[in-house]
Length: 56
Image (cartoon, rainbow, N blue to C red):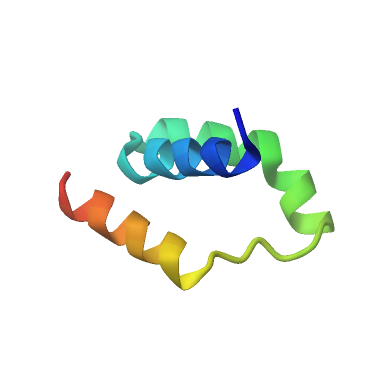
């Protein structure tokens, strides 16, 4: 599985995930998010998230 495919699957999962699951994932990644480089989404990724969110 390519990194791009993994990212797409994660975005899809997060877009429709329950609040407690999103919080749990954030807790697992929080240190990397705070200490690492900015987690920026491209316009295409934001569009994908928007489309997926509107289907919920």
